[in-house]
Image 1: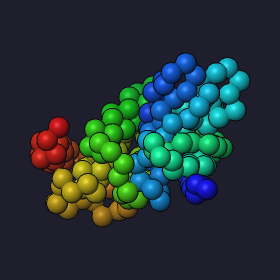
Image 2 (image 1 turned 120 degrees about the vertical axis):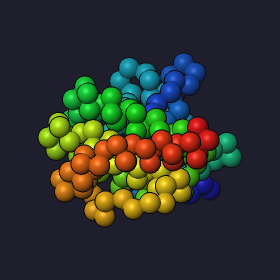
Image 3 (image 1 turned 30 degrees about the vertical axis):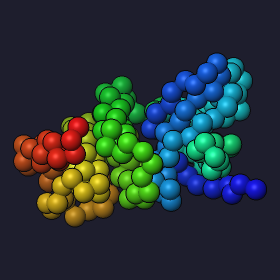
Length: 187
């Protein structure tokens, strides 16, 4: 008998697999980054389709099998894609892509989940002139969590207005650190 893992997850990407299935990349608080197969999610009227769109935060049920993870259930909690403006979605895609490129397999890094959810929350709530600072801070926190940046980051664990103002004021230095971290990662 296989063990079921019930957790919250944010869909970072979704790729078609076969005629109606999909391969989903999730970030979860307990399991970190997980890549899971889900069947029949691309058929019209599929029950799980709305809970497994890109940038959907859902309660998910995962089952570990011989050939990897299978996603067997999902209930939508927050549709971040719908809450973000088109420009904010572009920022979210860049950060999501960076995370997926840095984590090539499955990574049990639970600290990545609050970074992504905090980033999405900031994009939907803070003024648009601070969105670039939120993107910079998210990239820097991901690099730091994965060990590619050892310098100090604004101490706030969330994307507060104070931490975003700090990043905006020192934008050039933070971007240089991001570029150094990406170079250190070998991407």
